[in-house]
Amino acid sequence: MGQKGETKAVKFLKEHHYEILDINIRNKNSEVDIVAWDKKHNEVAFIEVKTRGSNFYGDPSVAVTKKKIDSMERVARAYLKAKRLFKDYRFDIIAVTPEGVKHFENVSWL
Image 1 (cartoon, rainbow, N blue to C red):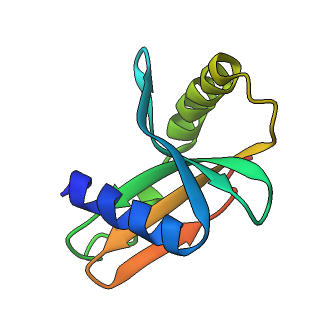
Image 2: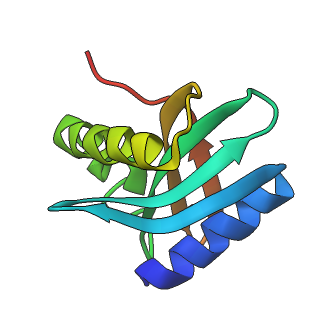
Image 3: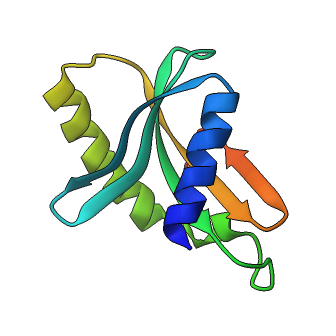
């Protein structure tokens, strides 16, 4: 189900004027599902995609923890350094369910 969700997320992002830079970036034990350029805000979005077959257990976005965002941060820093991109960046979540796709921009935990 995860691959189908990522495919839907990529389609959604392209329809909303994002440029897909990379998919499934890994760094040791960490991963980012999608790296995209947000043309509207001029920043790189590191995106976690969560897919569920129903909302029985709530929105899939609630499964993304601070620990996951922290691990995405490590991947993001290494990615930006390796690509020599000196751009603003943020972390997003895309939740995919049978009801559709929801995009949560610039997520963070205190």
